[in-house]
Image 1 (cartoon, rainbow, N blue to C red):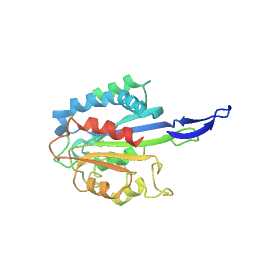
Image 2 (cartoon, helix red, strand yellow):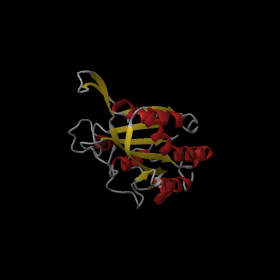
Image 3 (cartoon, rainbow, N blue to C red):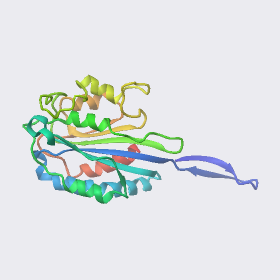
Image 4 (spheres, one colour):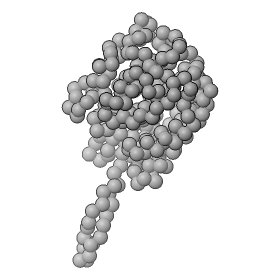
Length: 245
């Protein structure tokens, strides 16, 4: 919100406040492997609350959300789960498509996955390549990815022997980093430089820690590998989401 001075036309002075409005796109990348089974219902309940809570909390911070779209992206393990390794929806507008979003969330099952690690980097690549809204003269834009996982991640391409592995995915971690983009003029970036955000709820493990330490606009919250996520993660997600808008 911008504050400035104005003349009231009667020789007096006052102040005015300008509220910025935002188009917010949010991709929820959720580890849906069997290890998440003890807490998957909690994750689903919190995901269904998220649209209303984001709009409410943003309003409390005097941030006006012009449009909120949410996309659900589930990930597992290509070698263990084949065609179920990556499952995702299109962006859904809130609150108009909230029922469809809740239906998608309710359908999540914590199944499959091989031995830890899983294919979280492929999920992150798919999230980056989403059809994001772009900034305009009237609205600011936020392109936010949230990753929830209790597992470390395979290197990119670990499961590329599986027939349904997408050859258009980055070939390696360096190429994934190029997709994130390290400057405003990056020709390889998939997201708008000043709009992108990554909230990373993941173990302090290889690749996740490299992302946390080296990529810009990343907010890491470390989880404990193999022990699930914490109940308070939801409140942290909500607070951090509103802070990043």
